[in-house]
Length: 112
Length: 118
Image 1 (cartoon, rainbow over the protein chains, first blue to last red):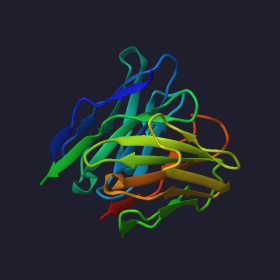
Image 2: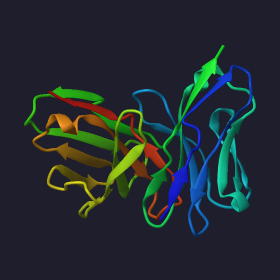
Image 3: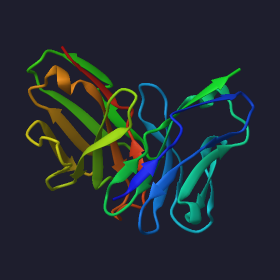
Image 4: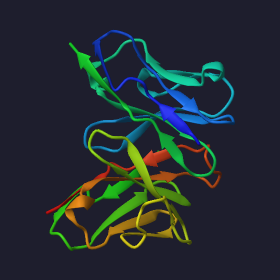
């Protein structure tokens, strides 16, 4: 069965510092991978997606993610975090049919 | 582009009443919409997949008679929580997927509905 692991429940970074959110997936075939962001009390916004091709994917708001098949990972990165990036981030794998399987989420706190 | 509108954004009602939540894709056609439930500080749990013109597919453990789903057009799906009770209080989120191919199109999410049953 497909699964997504986000090892970090909370991460705190200083404004202007770099960020990396970890995501590991379990899926037998080539996965479709997504990162979403959720602000409190709101729905999810798509940051970026990976289907095939270039393993380094650029998204909105200055985010990028790299697909590493050998490590079954799809980590999200941003070189310089802004206070407005504070939110919860979900990694998801789209696999086998219609479903998205989400990780448990990582809450990002940004300190000034 | 790819905007999904969900209404209402919050609702408070008495136990025993039924509540309808609407999910609309505003600028694209969605043959498939999804309904999720999110408990505080937890991830999204898929409740059902809503297919235009056919019956919804419910996940294991989700009561289909409790959570009625109708997907009558390519831009609208509704979730009705029937005879709601306090344990149904939660944050419900819908999403819609463009196109007809499975899996590789991203889902676009509504802003969610906060349901509180007194």
